[in-house]
Length: 363
Image 1: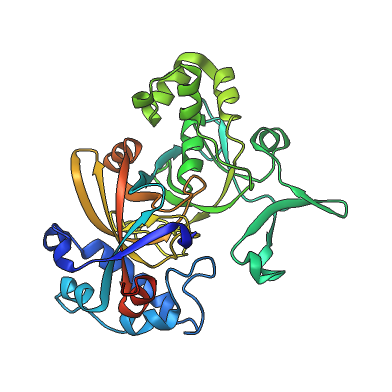
Image 2 (image 1 turned 60 degrees about the horizontal axis):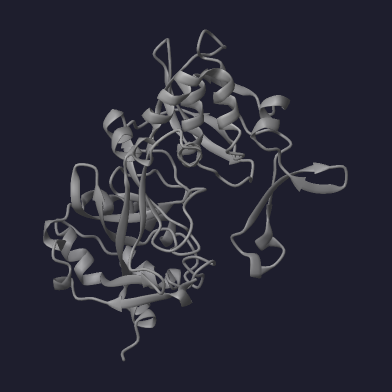
């Protein structure tokens, strides 16, 4: 993928808003990534799926440093800013996600009719990299059918077969959007709050029900948010709800975890707690996890926003270069902002000097 990208080394002075950026959230996120980097063999690539990040040995000296009180000086000293463009476009797409807080019951009750399911015992994940380095980082999800390994069930089949044990019961729209976000905080009516952490998905492709409603002419593009979809579902009833949900064959399973620190987000694909306004989900075939990146985009209520983030997660709809999903956190404000974030974005990645020099050789 990197052969389709253009890398341009920049000076810090080229980033006009650099001195105004709030670097604290991203620095905290980067420190967490450094713990993993420091514990791994230096000769390994930062990611086996892309050469952009160089090796762990390129990052370990940077991670061994500490900023003290001068976070900005830390980044300016140890990193080279590199603008990324593709051959097809100057920018990519930025969306947002959040950790939903979902009201649930321990048993089905009233409108709480949709189970939040645990990972089924028959769901198997094949790591293709174990068979060939050519497929490192790629996985297949399926199940055993006799002596054959076959794709796992689609959403409608899962609902019909009752695969996975119910962990809690919620409103159908809330459980569906919990699956889209990939994790959430479950609030029981007795006051207990736990985290529904991502356990697995069924390996099927993700399809947007909002896009489906737009294509059908049921909603305008600007109204295809969670609130707009929910209003449509409430108007059209349970049969329309089940039929629309089936458009998205992907199904997500969860495990319950305690919530020891409510100020930290769920674990992302990098197996680290996500930092609100400090973590971003990317396509790991484009960027490795742990890379700081300056993203410029129009956010809700903040046109012309620019922020420093760290790549720590991915998602089923996050595919391609400069495709990002900004983690907003949790609560009503995070939900509102995430649901209405859809902007073209420009990317500047921060790389250790040796890695940047290999990507941007002198002319």
